Length: 333
Image (cartoon, rainbow, N blue to C red; front, side, top):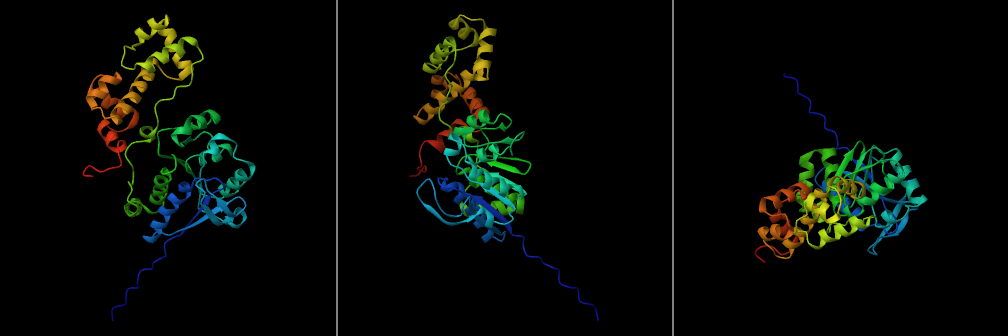
């Protein structure tokens, strides 16, 4: 008699325990977006055990007024595989508070992976966990993060960044992108793709954060010369703003003017002017101008120059940008 081959041993899928650190005033989608990604992954056979934790436990009120009931206190959270720190606008505007920082420190200490959504990065930064690392946050708060924590290499255009065991994401809905990346790390690209399909979202959305940001905000120049010069460029981006023309207008040498721009704005005159023109082109496209018209009236000149500027700064095309941001209606609506 031929011996029977034993059935292969099958092991149940490993369940990842994920703690979402929330608090009064937290942005609801920072918690619910990533949580829904993990829920869908679990439905598809890749289980997670999420728990919403707050410093004291119990009910917390989100920024939208909705209440997250019966959150778990830090002491009752137990060991977790991943910590996700949610965000809120106030985290970029004021100190995080000892209670929140203490909760994050305790949960992060034993977690193999630590993530932050949006301004949750400020909590990790305050604890020193991101020192010497690459990180991102909401585009509106990226400069604040970089200024307040100069040891962090802030990348304002990224939707999410991994550096070692730390993962940070852009603002609010980008928490979904972050969670899909976590699922891919844990279970592979197919699992993340299946979850993305269930949620009807891109597995990797096109472009970075720059395409979402508002018009360029230049800090007021300290010198009267640069203050006057930048105002004239902003008033008429399409005029001649070559380095020689700017230097003549300011009655400075080109070398001196370049040093002023580098000192005050951290960039060259040419790059600053290009970004001003790109911002104007973005607005012209949203106002209904053609690509050719937007290129001409913004000062970028040709369609090709406009396309190169969009690719370099926004990682998209003028046509795609206009299609995504002009209206919510579909083409046949």
